Length: 596
Image (cartoon, rainbow, N blue to C red; front, side, top):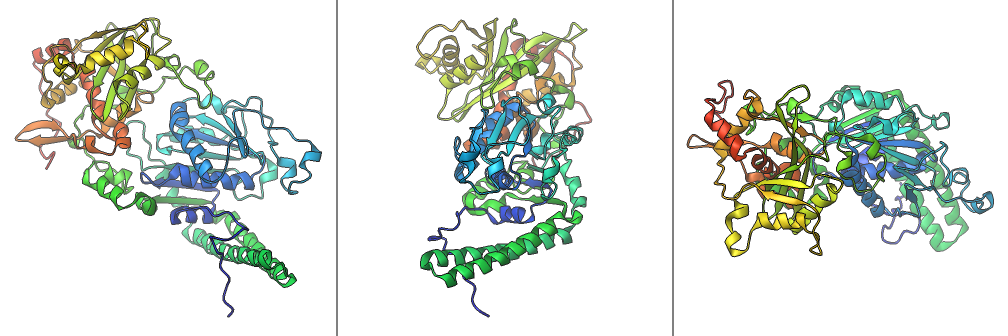
């Protein structure tokens, strides 16, 4: 048997060389119409897997409209979309050359299109769908166009028809909302021959149903996957890939020699590759190969993450390591939680002012006008946790419950900074976000460490107060900050544990009802739900080991945000209410085995 020619990756002029980890290669080989992936943290879900899919769709569905959905527009614009653009940049796609963002595509005459490949001419910067507004769209040079939307604002995708839908962080998407979204994936008949026609592609890390707002719907897709059919697709794809590699090597040989013999050899190899491509596509179009479901740990990207990343992850002994890294199902029980009384009713999600959101560009800066429950005429309350690596701020308003005289402490936003950004930057973030407020009075509650060093001119509370009341040039901003924790003593974790159980039970009418925006304060929500307790000599403590995590993981995985809520709620007056009440820790909460 003659030896097969291999591509010289360093010298080939017939192909672009891009990296994919082996797991991503398998997903590309399968190319299923419906794909559902539950993957560990750091597995490059967006920058690698989703961007590879997107580039495939650019060529596979020229001119087609597709949708990209997320849980909130804020998450989409601040987290997901920047990762998508970064991934496209890595793979050689350039804004203004290969795609445009929120703008009309360039126009070309038929004469100008003549030099293009025949398949591309009718689609070049030419979507098949009529686009009324380019707001929240990306259009590619093949005419493929993405409309970005969010589940919290279903109107962003209403009344449209799509050929394909992509969803990231799918654990935050309700099954009923997904079902409603898929009604819009009606397709266009000219794409019926594509394996991706009326397709869907969802990724997420593993959901923890004990966390409010996380839904474990993707695991049910496993029963829809036919393993034998998927393996057949992979086998056909591997043969096609090998044939294609041989064709590219033959083309390199022809380019180098220019001989007629080399040209014929290349054409023969290309014909073989084309036949195998047809076979591969036919296997993908089989109904049994319709669905791919995979659950994988962060180890699929181990060659990029490195051994140290995993060593740090396991050394921290976090409660979510099994779900977030190993992609195992959650086993955290109520008795392990530092806030066992935290329930679904403590959160709200109807927080979006859609009319105001419609005014924001895809990569635009939102302000408090998008918050439905933010009253610009009321003062703000801040709970602040100062730290060397992370500074946390829970922002709330004291409001009245509708139809009742009882107060609600409504947390409407969470802000933070990570080192090297510090209090000046946190103050600037606050001023920018809440610039539309008419009432510019702030009551700030904070850790006593904010006062500890004021005599040696290290007054953290005063520094943040100044960063809110004055801008970078020292000019007054119109804000007035009242420091409410001067002279405050230590709030011990055992007191916090008892206080939070009493307040969250909502039995004491002298205490406010707690309501937290689960979207605008998602980091706070995650921190509260993940906080564990430990017992030392019969005393309850909050497990603070998460605060040693790498910097980027602190906002969503550490106890730092929860401490900012502690200072917001545990005011002098409300602490007195709890201390004076003859309340006991409910007997149905088992903490006997915690921390062992």
